[in-house]
Length: 534
Image 1 (cartoon, rainbow, N blue to C red):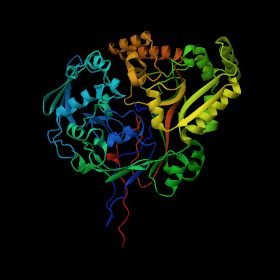
Image 2: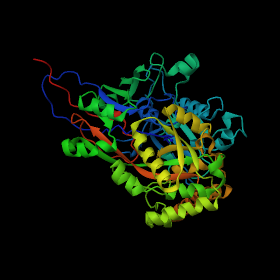
Image 3: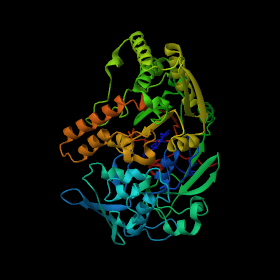
């Protein structure tokens, strides 16, 4: 609800490298304290299904490739790679001196084990479908093939890994950064089972290790001295603070108890006036929307969903109610994807009175009951409450719709989305890599748990499949746009806005960089230390 691609609610922790001038007699730098909203559902890279867990995984683990402070793909556990002329066979060369945090050598077999484990039905990975570009991953994910050794990932020797793809995949190097493609420590998993992610058992290969996890409180990470670039890591510790209440998080920031936190839209005006230098507005390649369960009552007639979408005044919602910098949206793929034109229906330019009249007509034509009654599933927290309350009020005022909102913890929302236990639900997606495919592939028939709408349209899948076999970039984008339009015509969701992270960032943090994917690994943070006493 992303990342689900990070299913949802990714709060970006801003980070970037900055050289600080030498100062005499410093005390030990204080931990960087970051508000992450809801608690992660897990820290197992093969089971992570979105939100804060993605943010933390980039600190604890490192894939073959990883992201810089500005979301550029850079070498990770692999120092170099080459590909065949047809783009199907990739060979990666791992760092020969790389080790896990327990001192065990990191080898190509660890990656083979990780990829196979992610696709193993016993793991129940909600993100396994992201591996479909790899040879035989589709058959394994669909359980048409049970032999995991058929997967196109092979260790040629301890430090050389070969990955064979089904088709050339332009965004493959970026795909390899995501948690599902990170290695996992077989030695710890086989010894401790599901408890391997506890601080006393966890073994990592990233810049940090897990020091402490207080349920519903905080997760503390400390520098991994065995990380290959440990000497360049700019901080010693990062503490992720669970904070569902956005207003309470802002108060903690003002009290000096947090260094980074998201700021509710209703507080933006005050901070623009009082602390403009600490306010960061960072457009993110992400979108928010209301997803429809296509097996439920709203999935039976697209006219009802279109009417609900038409009745939302997105300009008023963003500009006057939320008072933020979010961008009104009418499609799933956000603005900012290179060469991709964001979807916009004809009625988006109509006056609201005209839209509401058309929406009422659609409801009448669909034979919708009067009043139409809806059950809306949403995450708990003021980050969502104001937005959804405004939408509910617009529906009631314009169409007489009666909406029962059920606000629950994020982890409950994610679980119920996965099991399609909802009628209409709030969802988000943040890109793992800057390509429209990342947004659209989830709603393929073989999208498994990522296809939370349970959308089934072979013509949609066929357009996506055709796009993968096209070498011309413009033609490929045209096919992806046609696929998105077909999906939007089927009314499987109600787009709301493109994401913009509104953050408060402590002046002690230096070198903030805009980053469209909002990954921001903490290894690139630099933070001013206080003078030692005396």
